[in-house]
Image (cartoon, rainbow, N blue to C red):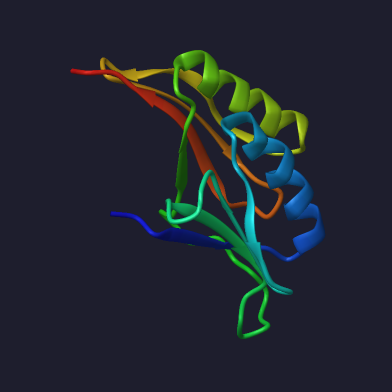
Length: 124
């Protein structure tokens, strides 16, 4: 259902270092790269996350209400992603924890202020 999500960056080199290291925890890697945009995924043809310099060459800005959610595979996996993101310079937006009976998640803002959620869902 989801092809890819794109988020903007004002410092693509810093963002690439951040996402290369962070997404390695969930077997993510760059699978396509052009000068102004890098696509991350786990395999060709699957859903991807892209980071880019905006095409209109204006400053990248975070969308109010926009968020990228990355599955951790388990609560421990969500914790590991959250901890790694903080280690890489992300800012806390809500420590990992049980939010609903079926949803465990933690929230950060990346180096450009984009909101990320690291989560695990269990059957209700």
